[in-house]
Structures are given as C-alpha cells and as structure tokens.
Length: 512
Ligand code: SF4
Image 1 (cartoon, rainbow, N blue to C red):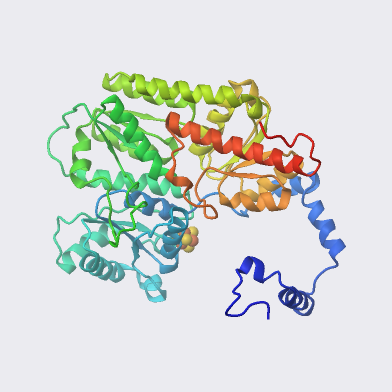
Image 2 (image 1 turned 90 degrees about the horizontal axis):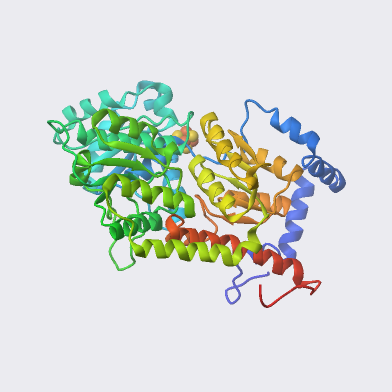
C-alpha cells in the first residue's frame, strides 16, 4: 500500500499513487461508459468556440455556477455584526449549515446561527410551532441580546408570516415582549446575499428606531453601513482608523470585524464586538448615514431617509485613490472635519507606489467578476492603474449597475473596449474568456476552475476565498487597502512573468 502508519500521505499525493490511478481507471471503464478520449477533447475544444458561446448566451432558464449566494446568507452575515445578536433562520437545517460553513470557510472562524429546523410536517402545516420552540430554546441556550430571524426558500414557498409568528411566539412562550426579535423575509429565489444583507440591516435598525419617541435630534456623528464584504474584518478597522484620524464620531451599522476574528486564548466567544443596541438607538440622531456599497443598502437608506432628516449617500466599494478621495471628501464636507496630513501622506505613498510600478500594469488585460459594488470599485481602481478590463461580470448586477459601469468605463481610455455583463454566471464567463481572453481574472476562489480550464491566473480579491488563508485580515479599502490590492495585482503579474521566463531562461531577471 502507498501509505502506512509511518508514512501517511496527504490526499493530494495519495490519490496520485499507482494503486489509486489504476483503481480510478478501472472504475471509469467499468462504470462510467467513457467516450473515447479524442471525442471528449473534441467536445471540450468546441465548448471554447464562438459557436458554443452563442449557444451558451442563448440560455434563458438555466444558471450554471452563479457568482452569488442566496439572500439568507447576507442576512446571517449582517446580523453577526450586532452585539449579542443570534441569527435564527426559519426553514430547513441544511441551508443554515451552508451559511455557517460558507462564512467559516472564508474567515476561518466559527459562525453561529440557529435554524428552526423545518421538516416535512412544517412544510405542510406551517412552521409556527418550530419558530415558537426555536425562539424559546435559542434564547435559553445561547443567552443572546437579540435574535434576528431570516427565512429560507422553504418558509417562503409556503408563505410563513414572520410578523404574525413572532407576535404569537412572544405570547406563547412567555419571554419578555420587549426582547428584540427583528426579522426579515429573505426569499432565496429572488435577489442575492446583497439584498439579504440590506433587508436585515434595515430590519434590525428599524426595529429600534421605530420604538424611539419624538423627532430625531441630529448631532455630529455619522453612520456607516459597510455592506457585505469578505474583507470586512480589516476594512471595518481601516475605516475606523481613518475616521478616528479625522476626529469623526461614527457608528458602523453592522460591524463583523471582531466576531469573525476572535483570538485563540482559551475562551470561545459566541458573540464578539459588533454594534450595540445603544449605538443603534443613538444612530437615529446621526447627521448622516453613508453606505459603502450601494447595492447592499438601497432599502436601508430609503428607511433612513423616511425616518430621519439625515443626509444619505451611497458609494461603490471605494477602492484606490479617486474613490477613497471621494469618500473622505464627502465625510469631510458632511462633518466639517478636515482630512489630516497623515491621510494625505498615505495618499501620496499610494500614488508613489502606483507610479513606481505602472509599467508592469499599464495595458494589462484583466477580467473581473463578483458582487456589483466590488466589480465597480475594482474596475475603477484598475482604470486608475492603466489596466484594461476586458470583461466585467456580475451575476447579481442589474440594468442600473450596467448603466453605471458603462458611464465609469466611458470616462477612461482604458475602458473603451470593456464589455459589461450583468446577470451572467461563471459558465458565461468561461465562454467569454475562451473567445476573448484576458491575461488575469480577478474574483473569488470559484474562479480557480477558470484558471484550471483556460490557464488564466486567478487573483483572489473578493468573497468567498476558501482556498487561501487570511487575506481578509488585510484591508482593500482606503489608501492602505489600495496598496495591498496593488501589491496583490503586481505579485500575480510578476509571478506569471517568472513562470513564463524560467524555462527559456531569457528575461528571467533578478530585478523587475
Ligand atoms: S437557495 Fe434556498 S434551499 Fe438553497 S441554501 Fe438558499 S435558502 Fe436554502
């Protein structure tokens, strides 16, 4: 045998041992009725042709490998950013296991969320009893300060009404009527995790604001809604650092930076950090609410505008120089606080680094995929760097996003040939890259199969990143984040150059 107690092999090497190769081969021949290898290759090549691309783009009722997740995942992420908040997902257990594992695989941290565990009987008779029992058990077992409920497909298909269920649950199980149970319907068959994030932040904030009496009395502080962001651990801290440097009093509405970054010191923290209930209440009296991601906050900003006289403004994942400038200048204008010299120096250092390296990035062709705000912010930074985006694809991008993207691209000579693809999936992207290639693809870990299939290197800069560790611990927003993104892009370009030149030995240089 290839391994024994003294020689234990990892699966990556074990399954390449001759015994396993022979076993796979015999399984293929005995059970898979394989087509001849030449035929398989012929079809594989055809799927990379313009002919296949046309057929692929005629797809109407089938999605293959969408670059998005379902609404409740966003709701669970948003709820995790509030102090002592336990997510309860009304529906089937498997869905909740998916959200927990998805977030845990990215952040390499445990993610707590409970399920009302609906099964066949609840699907037929409704999930009221599951919700009543779930609230009682979860509050007794996990001692939360609030329970935020979202829904899976199952609860939505049968039409369970959370408002009525929560009222009945409070009457039936005897815990305080004042105990906060914000809820949001998050039907997974429409929208995506960015909408789930939006409605959950709105629900939690509105839950406390609507109980406050009297008109809001605007003070000096501002609210920030970070949006669904796989880099939130570092980005929220970076945001706080920049605003502290400016002396701007602020509240992050949903701050996951601590709960997805707990220390190993012998104590399990089911709840860590996050926006407190007092902070949510006080946020009603803020001067303004700014959202870092437009498509993660449309409904929340509408609610803020309806409930208060606050200024509201949305950004699109401010990455790079101009977008960070625009964000900080808006903060400065709203609060009257000047941008300090220390931030100006950081800006200058980013510009210096971009200038030092511009010859390696200028004219490179890259494709970007991901959530609408990420793709917008990333593309804006690429244009600043002189990179030519070939394809910008967002499965959860809508026509308004497409229009905004095109306006951005029209403004730059590097964007004149860029194609924008809303509501397209990664199988579409495969066809696009096979027929009109890019040198690099920027996106999530899901892009590694494009790399495997088409040989185009993947640059991991957005959620989910499952197959690399700790990227989320370094910011991508602000000037410091811009530096980190710049280095990530440059490493990919220079690594590829080294790989391409090491065999011929020509231009395999020590200094780049
Ligand atoms: S799409 Fe529906 S069934 Fe699938 S994980 Fe989301 S809620 Fe559950």
